[in-house]
Each structure stands twice: as structure tokens, then as C-alpha cells.
Length: 358
Image: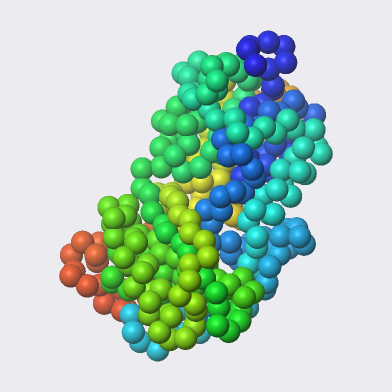
């Protein structure tokens, strides 16, 4: 598609939850919207632990077709000590592929043009966007919701420079349960392990700081082996995935390329919690806000972009700043101690009072 009158008001990079919600909101406001996704299909491959906590209302927004099972509690094991139960931790495990597909369908029904297998080659300083096939788009506004290594974010100098790396496998469960199981250890630097149930199977994974990425596979193998020996899960690996998680706090979230405004949402804006890695709720909410802000700016409200940044900080700023502070303390412990003590690990995790202390 060369530059022409058919070039959209709003170009959205990516079609995950943030992108799809932005596309729907902007299209509902009457804007012409083109959303591009490099993947061939919404939500595939899955790069997510698929848990949505209810504390921000996310479970209530989950389409029925994407719901797998409820979560009622959290069980945290620190090193080899007895597990600690957080009895009231509601949420829901979802099927991420169905979840994303439902959001994309809603965006399309609102009037957005959503295209898959459409990778972007470059986002230029003048706000033009070059596709892999060579076509150039010249939108009036760009929404970058294209993940932690966002091209739109790089173009405006808002880079996620702190990244966590994850690896996850799907395994059979020997017995069903309804908790999110967390594993904290000095042997998992800068992150944690998880076992999240999905009916008869579970997602078993690990996240670590970026410089420990090469150790992810053997660390996950050890955790897998331990849980197999405990009789909790099966040996066979049914699926595997992984990905990057931003862990440095809010980036952007608004900038310009020439005369073209750029808004960032979801992981591109650094809204993923740098301690837990949770990001689905933030993606959904920020995407909808970005779409509405874009529509207001196109309608002549010059303060819409600044208002978007303020809205994100109001919604996510306090929790992100607390998480960044706890993470910084934990990483300092890893830097200065051979093995951070269990108390330091507890103070870095949301299930413990130390985390929420002033």
C-alpha cells in the first residue's frame, strides 16, 4: 500500500491485547484504523503464562470462550522451606490464543482493518512506516503496541533497556488444583519459577534477568525433574515457549516522529510488572486508553497525548514504582551476596507483608 488517501488515520503495530483494544476503541470513535501483526494468527505462538489476576478486574473482562479455570489462591515456596499459602488470590487461567482472537474479532467488528503476516521493516524519523514488502505507510498517528522490543518505541527513543527472559513448558498434571504455585530461590537470579494449572495440564516456567538467559534451560529442567519426582506433574513436555518481559517501568508513553504522534501501550510502554511479569490487564487497559486518546487528538484535542501519559501513571505508576524498588533491592542482594537469604526473597514477592511495607 503506497502513500495515498487510503492511508489510515491510525496505524497500530501489533495485534496482541493492547493493539486489539486500541484498534477497537479508535474505530468505535470513527477513525480509520489499520493494525499490522507479523504473526500469521492472533495469539499464536503463545508467549504467556496465561494467568489473569482478578485484582484489577481483568478476570471479569475475559471472554467466556477463553476461560479455562478459576484460580483461588497462591502458594509460594522459598528455597526448600515449607510453602506459604496466600488463601485469597483470585484470578483466572485463560487460553491466550482464544483470548487474543476474540479481541481481534471485536476490533474488526468495530471497523478496524486487521492484517496478519504483515511484518514492519522500519519506523522512520518522519513517521512513515516501511513494510517488509517495501510498501510505505504514512499515518496521521502511530500506536506502538508491538512488544518489549517495540520498533515504535525505539524510533522515539523509549527503549525497554531492562529485560527478563523466560522459558516455559506445558506438562500433564497428576492432580488438579486451583492455586498459582511460585518458586523463589537464590538459584533463580532476578526472577522466579511458576506452575500454573490449566485443567489437566499446567504451564511450568522460569524467568531470570537477561544475563542469565543461557542458564534458563538447565534451571527449568531441574525444576521439572523435582516436580516429577514429587508426583505432581508428568515427564513428557507437551509444548514449549518463551519470550522477553520488560522490567524497567514506564517508557514513553508519548512522543513524535516529525509531525506524527506516537503512543506506546502494553509491553512497548513498559507496563508489565517487573516483579511478577503480569501484563495482560495493563495491555488491555492501556490499549483502550491509547485508542481513545488517539481519536481525541485527531478530533483536535491537543492535550489528549499528555492526558494519556497522565492516565497511565495514575493507573500503573504506584504499583510499578513499588515493584521497581523491590526488584532493585533484590538485584542488589544478588550482586553483593553469594546467595540472597530467604527473607530477602520474601521481601521481593507480592505474597508477603514485607513487599507491601512502606
